[in-house]
Length: 82
Image (tube, rainbow, N blue to C red):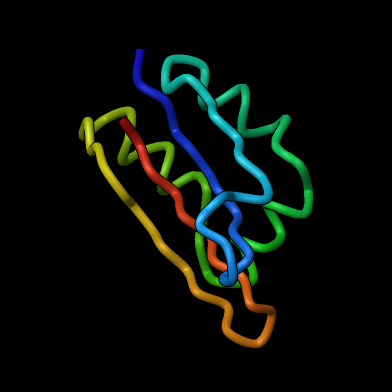
């Protein structure tokens, strides 16, 4: 089963500080359960989780969807489907 994966990295590490995996089959319901800090961090960067839901469910897009580097916070967020 394919998953949507959101990973938050500290730029000084290759290991994620936080990882969220959501099965694509239950993504719509699970998106309401995602931690608020992840949702607000995505929204601050102009990423609408509903667009990601649509792309992964309707168009069967896989691989890295979005990679954000927040240099001031020394943080990187990677969203992938696969």
